[in-house]
Image (cartoon, rainbow, N blue to C red; front, side, top):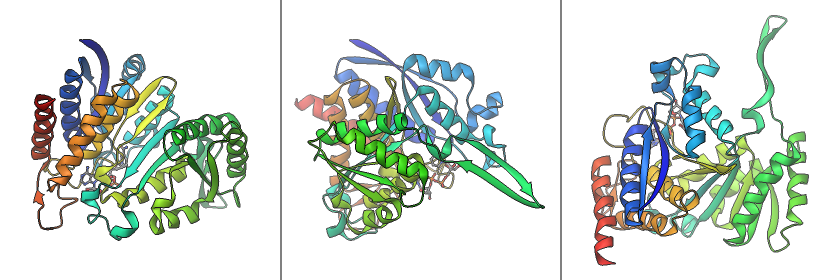
Length: 365
Ligand code: NAD
């Protein structure tokens, strides 16, 4: 058996619930592929603040960097909402991404045929949608300096800075062009070049990289138009590459194509490291109720197999188990609509169903 080490950061709210299911599946499927996973679970976000007075400690960061492969649930919650900026759970997340150097966030958005009626959009609009959003993750306005709040003539004001360098744009653009080579060969770069200097830098930097990829069709779209096009005609997109802020917003909008935020996985790659997390947050409104949809986390585990462990067979096995669960009509509350042939299930039932699916498949191989 090959040995692999990963760090699990379940976090807050529904984070531990969905992480539990995902890691259970991951361990089972990896074992089937002759890989023994050593998983170290550490506190992170609000739960880390409660224990250590900060959302992530230097020691935890060091352990994550040493392992190189990290699985994260979700962070945040009302309990920690009034903490100052750098003590908030989300600050821990930004720090982790930065320290790991994972500059490219890959968010696949595929509409499962069995779920096309769960979306708020028409079936004919979303059927066949298969988009890969590549979001720049360690630069832009979430990290730019200066960043402060002050006062002018008794009127308080705040400043954030959106900064992008050519090299930051080009390394993430390369990830997008490489991904497009394995897909439909098209990249759409999204910016706000009609208004923002940083977007003009973004566009010219992407254009330079495009010269290395004459086989890939490059287009540019303004972010406001893109928000509309994602809803109007999502099938027009193959790979989309964009900055941190725009990618954050566009990928949440795109999540509704799939029916629920609870369906979207993500992989953040860079510097030889991989950070895998569902796109959704800690969903405090449903935490502890046993109703969270764990499929985004489970699909993130599949991406971990694909990109960090290089176990394509294991990744496919997990993805097929998800597809067969949906085809069998099993739905968590976020997806359930009393449609004929569907059954409402809780988080634990989904876990058992998926474990049965991957185990049964082994027996028939
Ligand atoms: P959220 O994603 O937590 O929830 C938005 C809505 O979607 C809620 O109604 C929630 O119940 C539902 N939802 C989300 N995931 C679901 C799942 N797996 N199954 C079923 N329903 C699901 O976003 P929010 O409410 O804006 O934020 C809540 C907290 O999460 C905040 O503290 C926020 O800062 C944090 N947050 C964390 C991350 C992260 O850890 N990566 C991302 C976004 C938000």
